Image (cartoon, rainbow, N blue to C red; front, side, top):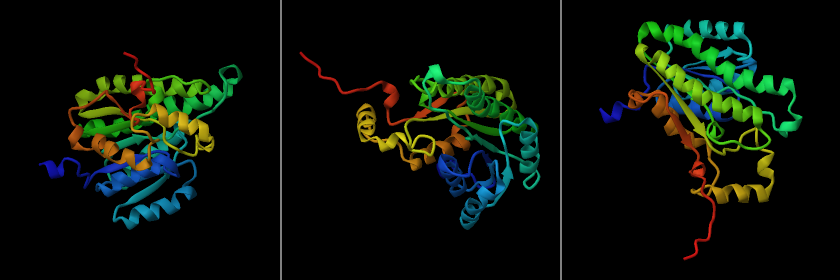
Length: 262
């Protein structure tokens, strides 16, 4: 049994926001574990290269346009994702964005962009896909949160609010859909270098400060998420729901260098 717990053969997974970044890495991990994919982006053309890569692994990859800020786009995506497979087993809500700005300078539009993408989008994509999971009494929903789901940082107020909301939403949906055989969990990465935050990593002093606060003494690498996303998508996690699993090298322990005097 142990050899099959993490096997996703015969499963179908949607991963939103797979034109680049961590979304591609997580989708790749699911494909390597045996899942066929639906990959999404706001523009289908941006998915062409990744589709070919997934297919080179021997898995199917159906590209679908999706704007998570648009309700009709979400409904069209759900229909297009279901059509080629006749089922959806796994959903990874990865699509997200950020605006870095002091709180005093955050605009109304900044707030709406981040919250509509990260929080409202996660809810309505989950709702659309749960509608096809419920009749089969099976589903694995993985919401992508962040260390900011449990910590707050200056300069990213809307982002922290959205990721904290994703954590709470995860617990609510887990309670709502658990009786239908659907688990809902939150995968919360710590500090990983992505397109959204790469500007920070150009600052050597900031990177040194960050690494000093991480017990494992390095930022995350995309491959560090592989095992966790497969675990939460697989039958190995069938009795786990409503949880936020931090993959953060231990930064959420609040550890810093300290001199202890006797």
